[in-house]
Length: 326
Image (cartoon, rainbow, N blue to C red; front, side):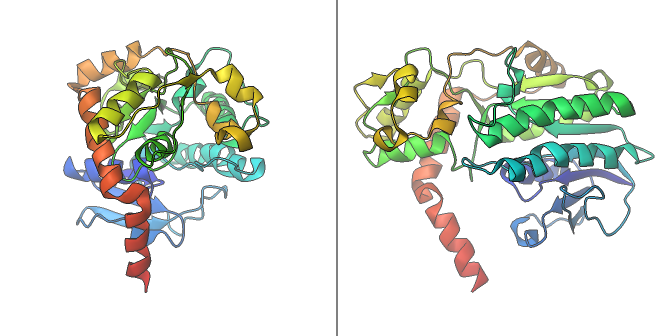
């Protein structure tokens, strides 16, 4: 019997979760895409690394496993994705992992990682606005429907923008432009929000979920309720980094009407800039029960920004990986 299997273990969230589970003394199978084995940088006697392809109904696994907890952190996350490619992982892949978990004789829980935007009331998948968010929304619905049909104990965690070493997409690109003096204005208004959560906190949140029977069938929107509005966030980071902050904001309605070639902002990214607010009460109640304490947002932002600059917004990591293969 292995305690846990983590799909997407070579990724940003999956890698942190594997390390967290091992720190807690659990045995872990890290399931990664073929060719990604070297990206699992943890060495531990309780760790087994296997290759998997969740776009296949059998997940491409060569061996059978007896596992108690299944974590699906695998996702296709990028802007400009082809709809079919996004659906293969974020919709079909989510269902394939669930159906595989349903056959485990000792399954305690399937924990699936989705995204905070799926929790917006009335939110519907719109592939015209972008395949990533649309596929995650569709995948969330497909997962709940299929889990009900199979009567599988599922918990879904919907994180906001997760900040930590190795995160270079989305908000990180805005911080890069700020650092390089290429952010002429802040997109949105004073209520525009891109909520955040720290990587280490979210990994521990995931790790603790199966320990509590009452979390089965629940969905948790995990974000820092003290996340600053986007203009305040940008100005805070500008002051911390010692660079000028943009003096102006541009309303989202204006940005959506202007050509992306003029604004420099991809339309798909605009979907994540919103004045929506999110119900985090269930996640906060669970965190209190589990004894989890979220670090202050300002501390998280400062440490993350320092890492981004030190790592040249991912260039240093990419260069190091390239050198390691030659």
